[in-house]
Image 1: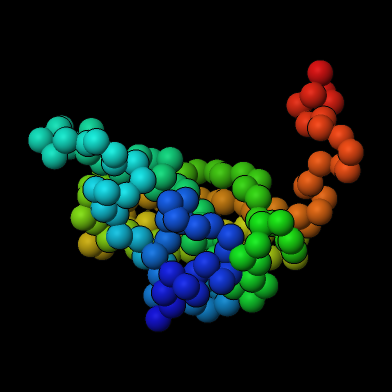
Image 2: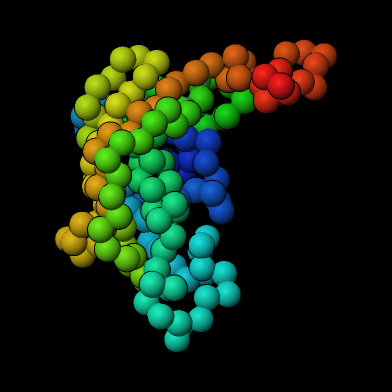
Length: 169
């Protein structure tokens, strides 16, 4: 249905940080199904030995959650796309609750991310869902909250090199 070109027209992620290959189904404001083909040459696997133990060859959990989160951003931004992180609203991860990795994901797997909209408050979006491989759940996300904030508000003030961390010190 929707290829990488459509995905990158909605969100600012680009390879190698782009972890969603295509959108298989979308009901804007309700649900989205996205796919990611996990390859041994992709992020998370450089130099991995095929003879290594199964756990050592599995897709890193952080990348699994990031891939699912990108699918959540796609749902949140489908009707308000922003492929430029320096303009418009930027989707920021505000929180994750009850996320559980349930099975390893091996190279050659096709991840199917199912994301449903729990609530859309305009500048805050709450999502939930699962990821599966061959119909077997590998990740469940009880709640992932995104904050949509203007890119201009996130930029450092003109003429200052101070960061938020430096201001707190």
